[in-house]
Image (tube, rainbow over all chains, first blue to last red):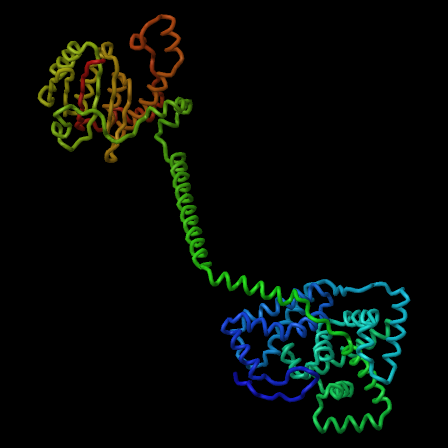
Length: 212
Length: 342
């Protein structure tokens, strides 16, 4: 466990930036096959893993199954985890790869949506989205979370991105992962992360503007 | 798609938004933003998009995630705790047994098929290809016996003891109700033919054995002399040892003419083959409908009816086998066993 206590650079959002002793001990207990430790590990990461998968695949049922598969695969192979990368990165690599492979097999993303763009609420959401895109002030997350139709529009726009671009934008803007970990998680170069993220954000902006 | 290139302005702006620039790049970008309105506007567009996505609500993981993983892992632990391995081994053993049995069955099947194919394709004797042979019924074939030697040998006297082991024996068994008359006739014929010196005679209560080890010509001549005797014979049985050890040909209801023909063959193999053919012909003759019809009309017994037996008509083969050919000086070991008919 050479990474124990190693403080990583570049703290962003609430993501764990260091492998603490508690997690190292937890992983060791999991490696010894202790069910309680495995449960703790799942509880610790399930929300974030589930959200990333949901935002990439766009379907709640699929996201549940993929999250289960990711944890099962990770815990079954936890004996192979040597701590060369962080457990967080290792787990997300498994989850994202499973999800991207699943998306490749699936014909098209089927976001659970109201699919009723003619309603008054929907039109109102579009107007609000236009204001948010043009407004200088940052959007209020609470307001967006409460506006179901607005969320629906954002999910639809996200679904129109190609899977690799969707993955980088979700890992960065939703999960808050830094570039180095994104490169490690997606097994791509750091420069590729930057260029892909740039294209993803530009494309997303265009998609959103087209929807208005 | 080459995604690896020098970072352009937009990429630098994104990195600025994400806090991924080093000190020098950070200073440069800040200076650029403050001096260029277009760059500032571009930055704002990117920032809005990023913030909108970041503002999307984060759903809590449904309980099904944890439950599903726990169920899967518990099932796996149960499988490893209890002797699943034993079951697998038992399964493997069962599979091995099934494979072995299947292989054995396959080998057996192949063996049977090979035997059938061999029986179909094995070379037949020249006489079997003749028209009369083609019409031969299946039941007739069954009469040709090729069995281990179990024929009744003369009690207390073996052929080898009498004849030595240099010649394969021909045993003619005659069953008659007129035992005395038949014995007298055979003895006279042996005496008249001058074969007494090469004959060993043994008389038992209901059985008389004449063991001859004489020249082929003389033996055939004796058989020819015995033609008149056939009217008193109820049943005949000729057995010839074959060259292959422990096997022999048995021909039933052999006639005197057939016996002579057999004895005049040049070697043991030819004699055995001809005996085999006669056995088939005699069996076929026994199945001819005329015999039963005549028996019913005339009310006579089987042995009173004289039915002409079919004869081989292939000139060349029989001529080749006949005595008039070449070698005649061969010694033949003929044993005539006369038994009382029951």
